[in-house]
Each structure stands twice: as structure tokens, then as C-alpha cells.
Length: 220
View 1 (tube, rainbow, N blue to C red):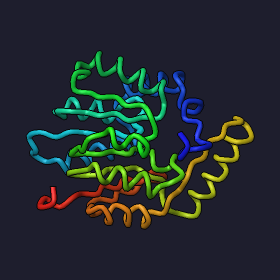
View 2: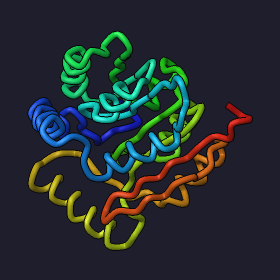
View 3: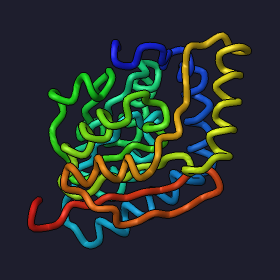
């Protein structure tokens, strides 16, 4: 994935990590920022009879599993990690919604042309793993007919300091070419606005912040 050069997704997000995260979800359900993101999505959907979901970099599929049970008519999972997608396929089959799920492996910016629009597009702890934030957010925003829901690190000096330490540990202790980014929220907002989406919810957390952008009904 040339536009993600240096981001070793399959090494950081490997089969062992995926299995551990799935066990945690099965024991405790959605947790932390993901639970808050899910709550915001459900509130934004309201009484909508049918909706579709595009989950970009969704890992073991927590949002997919929960929104499938909430009635999503179609779910598309795009992930750069092959091990996560392999685990996701089996889980979706076990939970009974594999016939409503499409899985695409690759960097979303590069494969966006293969992906259809969706009512809800999610980037849960994904923007922080991507070097070119404007490209990613724009590609995702273009697919969102109803809302774009994301979780990103708090936009603050101390989070940048903490992330710098994390990147140093990844590079020098784990010997992995992978970086985490703290992209400015104002810059994310600007890309979303350029694509017709308005910030409707900003839910702070200690580290992770939930931000939901919605498209005016008249333009859907």
C-alpha cells in the first residue's frame, strides 16, 4: 500500500492481537470510546427503518456486530489487515449476518472506488493510524449518505507528547515501522465540511474523542 508506506498493519494488527480483542469483546461487549461511538450512532439513526454501514479499519468488527443486530441491511468491512478480516468472516457467520456482509482487504483510499455508499460510515481509532488524514477523511465522507462517525485522540499537547513516546517505543523496542498520529480536529472538521458534513456531536473522553458528522436531510 504505497500511500501507507511505513505502516506495517499486518505486523501490528496480527492474528494473535485480533483473537485477543475478539475474546475481550465477547466477554465484556463494547467498551470505552467504541461504546460511546455506538451510542452516538444509535441516537443519530433514530427511528430509521433501514440503514447500511461501512466500517473502515473496524478490526474485529465490534461496530459491525452491534449494528447488524440493530438491523443494518448491508455491512461493508474494509480493512488493511488480512488477519482481522479472516477472523471477522468467521465471526459474522457465527452471529448469523454473513449474508449481509461484504469484506474488502486494502487501504481504503486505494480501494474506495470498489466501495458503495452507506448510511453510516465509521472510523473507530483509524484516522490516528493514517499518515494522510485529508485523503482518508475525504474518501470516507464521500461515502456517507447519513453520518460519518469517528474516534480520534484528544487534540492536545499532552496527547502529542504521549504519542511521540509510543512511536519511539514501537520503532526502537518493537522494531516496527508504524506510527500513530494526532491530527488536528479543526482540520478533520474542515475536510468533512468540504464534503457536505456538519459536526453534530463531539463527546470528549480522557484520551479518545467521539466526533459525529451528519449530512443535511435535503442533500441525502
